[in-house]
Length: 228
Image 1 (spheres, one colour):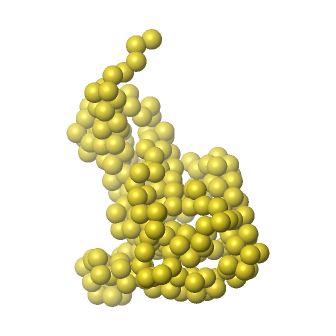
Image 2: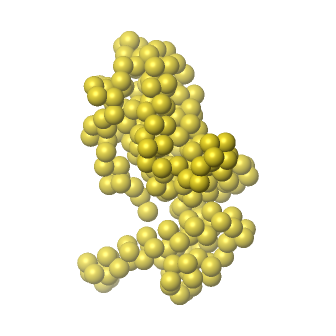
């Protein structure tokens, strides 16, 4: 068997990234039914045959995008343990989620649209990998409560709260802009929103915020943990 050399691997990784980014835009605009591999290929600037070679099918590409979005969102909590500081972890999670909301709003809307339709393409993921992920994070949160490091809040509802509160600013952007009479949310808006969410959620959990309030210790490089 002939293995691919480094230039070939690099080219493949680049093309897969280009295809995923193009597909995210096309699916977010037209939905799964309205999108076509040809439209994705045109958006990526690649032949349709190349797109199919790298991703296999429209369905596989769509599911890969949805799972990539969830992996990006949840990477912040992948390696947490009961010896970590809950203030650092929760604030880091909220800040990373808000950063991703700003950087990848189309991915967030794509995921929301899929769930609103009953998540037909995500049933296996939701009932398997994601359910286990939530259970394992919830266990850590419960241990923090047992140690008196945070109030005995329901850990699963807390995860749902952080997911929904942070994704709201992408999924309901039109509503927010209409009410606030803005054309777009800027950097200062996102900073203020993030500080507000950190303050309200951590205080509601009885958790002391990290020193300085705006730090993201050892959680800042979330992009390194993204999957494609």
